[in-house]
Length: 266
Figure (cartoon, helix red, strand yellow):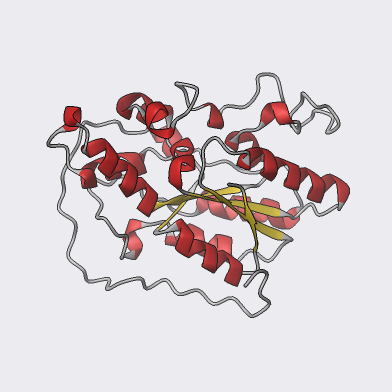
């Protein structure tokens, strides 16, 4: 199942394109700014193929203007199918897919170590690390606005009230010596933003988003708040650069079919 060599062929038709439109239901607006919507990360490192991938992903459209989304993403307009096609079509390598489901686990540290080893030890500048994120780990892919609005720190069991997973270490830059433990490439700088700058891609999960939304809507203080509208709000406020797919556990099979090797980040 891992690292299959057969040619990759994508199948995007997850449901009838003529399905009726989702009813528009609004929730208290927390829109991301125009800058946040367009400022997708582009890698500053890596080989030619990895840099080319980052540039293509930065141009691939992301819909982040939902008012309501259903329980199941069964239409292409509900997820980032164009960006997914770019990602699955990557012809560089090696390629590794990290499943991350526990926010408190060492998945970011493991991804950083893998990238360091591939680039600096094995000389694979076009190595691509992809994080397939779901479960409590998925809270890390929402903006700080969402953490504040819905109390995501408590829901995720995070020790911090802020989304520290998207904040790089102050003063650390890509120009740091890669042997500096406290520098950009060291364990003191385990975060999504820095890994994105190095070319890593983070995949968001519609199923997880809707599950989190249902948990939010079920709270007594949120009585009457439709889960589909909360899910739309969360989707609109995903951090820049992520690729939204219908189901991360289903997408892992797509990644492996595209010759990504599987790794468990817990």
